[in-house]
Each structure stands twice: as C-alpha cells, then as structure tokens.
Length: 310
Length: 284
Ligand SMILES: Nc1ncnc2c1ncn2[C@@H]1O[C@H](COP(=O)(O)OP(=O)(O)OP(=O)(O)O)[C@@H](O)[C@H]1O
Ligand SMILES: [Mg+2]
Picture 1 (cartoon, each protein chain N blue to C red):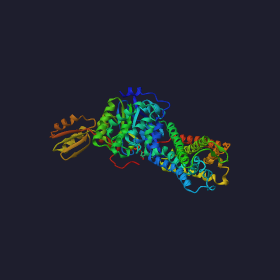
Picture 2 (cartoon, helix red, strand yellow):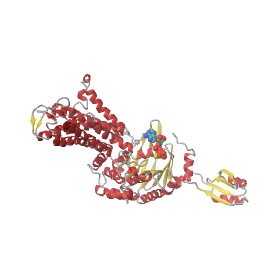
Picture 3 (tube, each protein chain N blue to C red):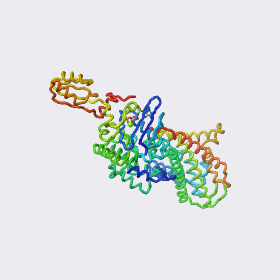
Picture 4 (cartoon, helix red, strand yellow):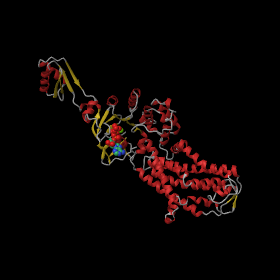
C-alpha cells in the first residue's frame, strides 16, 4: 500500500493565459478524509479533473494510490469512485439504467452481480424507490444522489467527491456525512471538495485550502486551526486597565470593547492572562479563549472579499 | 474491507461487449432515432403505393430502378435506396455520429465514462462500431420495408436486370442484400468523418450539420465536371455504384473502388479522431 492515496507535485494547469492551478503539492494520506476547500474559481474542480486524467496538466505530476496518472488510469481508476462537478446522466434513461450503463462500461465489473450492485448503490443513496423514474424527472437532490450512487457501484479505495452535498436537503447532507464516515471506516480514502466549512469541519481529518490556483495551507484539521491566531477576551468594567495588562503580557492586536479587552494570545499561555489581571487588581467578570473555527481560518487565508478572482 | 475486496475484483476482460450493447440500446431506444427510422421506412412505402396507384405502362424518366418496379417488387427497395442516398441516409448517419462523442460531452456523461475508466481509444472504437451497426440497420430498414411491400404489391419471381438479362429470384434477393451492405459500408465511412467532427466539439447539432454539409458538398463537387480530377477521391463518388450489381456480368470496378475509398476515409478519419481525442482536455 502506498503511503499517500493522492499526491501531486508542482501540479499546474493553464487555460490560455489563465492559470487555473498553480504548482500545488497536494498530499492526502491513505485513510484520510481530505477536505478540499477554496472559494469559487479557485481551481478545485480543475485539480480534480487532473487527478482523474480528464485534463492534462501543463506541468507537474499526479500519483493516485501509488500509480502515476494518466498513465496508470486503466489499473487505478477501477478502484476510484468519482463525482466531478455535479451529476451528468442520460435524461431519457432511468436512474437504474444509467447506473447499469456505467457498470457495463467497466471491464473489471462482473456482469452477473451488476443488477445487485446497482440496486445496492441506489439503496445506499436512498433512491431505490425512484430507481425506475427517468433521470430528467429527477429533482436536483435526486440527481446529486444518483451521481454519488454511481461512485459507489464498486468497493473503492479512493473516493473523489466534488461538492457532494450540493443541492441536498438537510437529511441528504447528513447522510452524505454519515456515508463519508462509514466509507472512511471501511478503509477508503476520501477527498471531498466543499464550500460548506462546518460540513468539512465535522467530517474531515485533513484539509487543504485553495485560493486563486494555489494551495495556501494543508494538513490535519488541528494543525490548520493552529495556524490562525487564538484570541483571549477579558470581561471587566475596567477595559482600559485590562488592555494595558494584556499588552504588558505580550498579547498582540489588543483592543478594548464595551466592558471587555481582547488580544491575540500568540505564545502567551491563557491561564497567565487571568492571573496577571487579578494580580493587577482588575475585577475579572469573565474570560474566554476563542479558538478559531475553520471558517475563521478560511477567511483569514483567502480574504473577506466576495468577488471571484478572475 | 474495501481494499481487500478491490483486490479480489476480476481482472479486466480483454474483450467485453457490454459497453457496445449498452451503446446500441441507447441508440435504438432513443425516440428521436426511432422516428428517424420511421422516416427512412416511409420512403419505400411512398414509392410502392404511388407506383401501384399510377397507371401502368409508364416508363422512362425516373431513376433506373423505377421503370422495373412493376416487373419485380424487389426493385422497390432499390428505388428507395437510390432516392434516400443523397439526403435521408446521410442525415441519419450524421445525426448518430455527430451525437456520438459531442452528445456525451454535452450531457457531461463523457467525463463519467472516462473515469469508469473507459480508455479513450476503446470509447472511440465502441462508438464507431455502434455507428457502423446503425448505418447497416438504417440501410436494412429501407431494404426490408421495400422488399416486403414490393413483393406484396408487385410480386417476385425472376429478375430482369438493368442490362436486360434474367436471373432467378434468389439471385435477385442476394443482389439486393449485397447492394444494401455496400451502401452500409459507404455510410460507415461517412460515420468515421462524423466521429471525428463529433470529437472536436461539445455541440451535437453543430456536428451533425457539419457532417451533412460535408456529404452534400461531396455530392455537389461530384456533379461539377470541371473538377473531375477530384471525383475519384470524393467520399460519395462511388456510392451509386451499387447499381452495377444489377448487371450481368456484375461491373466490379466501381464497387471495389467505392469500398477502397470508404476504407481509406474510415481509417484516416478514425485515426484523426483518435489523435484529437486521445489528449483532449475534457472540461465539459
Ligand atoms: N475549460 C476552461 N477554460 C478556461 N478556463 C477555465 C476552464 N475551466 C476552468 N477554468 C478557469 O479555471 C479557474 C478554476 O476553475 P475551477 O472550476 O477549477 O474552480 P472551482 O474551485 O472548482 O470553483 P467552484 O467552487 O465554483 O466549483 C476558474 O478561473 C475558471 O474560470
Ligand atoms: Mg468546482
């Protein structure tokens, strides 16, 4: 077994003048649930297309489950289930017939078990009751579920899911979360791109953050969180005094608010803050240490701006 | 564990017809294509009924086979094939081959087929095989309807060939079948052009129009005497040579040239499609 399920080196894609992916070294260890984050147009889907051999890199290389891509596609892709930029099926075929077609295309799949596996995949995404309906009559969420079902036609060592919860209802979203968890428990590696940071926070062990084609940060969720500053807030009726103490302790960016003083802890241990304030005779009414959410990390890395970077 | 299960998966079969069968099912169950087949089948019906209703004894004027229809019903099929060869049959093949890759790209299903994985060369092979089967089916539909209706309305029996000599009924049927297969081969060559065009775009309708323009331009050039040096290289130049099967002895020159040209077009355009598609970025 290779040490990394997905590894890229200097992976770059240029569309004309536009650099969509810019020299990224992505690394998802075997068994990880890797959250692939980034604002719209940051290059997530383009990266995923290169991982799967749909798009040829301008520079750099990809290895999936130890095999180089796209050279090893025939050997490695049967072990990979993928959802790329939303569902796509033949509109006038039923959900079941669409999955049967994909199964028929796979030379490694056993035709004798096809029907059973198709139904198992449909069942796993809650579509068994609607399996005979034509795809064009499916709702957005049903289509998304069918695409996830297609990725589950075979036992997979790696799943690459590009925004799997897009268009799903709350139950569907929660089911995808459970599904990803159970796939990871079965030993699969999952790479999931998403905008829903709370989602990613709940299901991922690792994250990578893309911005304008670059991989700004990558690592375990705990490590990534640590890269953003932890803040401490003292609630007191003497905020100016408290702020002075915080500055003396070495906290950065100290600000005073209405009945509180806040600063960035940096290297300072949180317990020292309370002790110092009490020592200075400041009445401490409350004390909070705010560890950043993934959203804070994301915004601090990719900026507050709403506009897509062209 | 999934890893262990994945290892237990059977080795990929070298030859699997499942994708081709799926492809054919897709083509022959699509409503648009069934309607198209209906149109192809309507032409021999029109011819047979029109000739039946018109006063007998009229001859001359129309294409070769028309005057012979009342003598032998088999000629209904040949008259229908002759009439459908410039437009209806190429249109049918253009619709299917134009849709082959561009249609999947347009729907987005192309990316999912490729990550199954289906190797790109294999996908083109399967798509082309399906186009060839469709071309044969399209020609066969015209022939079958024509033969059946012709025999019902005008009867069979010995066949008087265009060259005047007589052959038995079975020999006549064999000649009709051979002509149908020849036309299917010619149409398959057009299908290779279609496969190539289809691999260039994500717009199936655009591809279909381009293919039809190609075959029509070929017919037009073929009718301009000033470019006669070009004629032997035109895809459609030998298409009507199937009429030579109804002479005694059969004039093979045109037919063999036609098959060579068809094979050359099929090989060149299939390779062009392969060269284009093998490294193409699939961003649909
Ligand atoms: N076929 C293409 N031709 C030209 N530019 C492209 C093409 N595909 C993608 N791009 C550009 O590459 C950049 C990255 O696009 P990509 O689809 O990878 O973003 P993404 O991170 O998946 O965004 P989203 O979150 O909206 O899905 C964008 O600026 C996009 O305009
Ligand atoms: Mg995307």
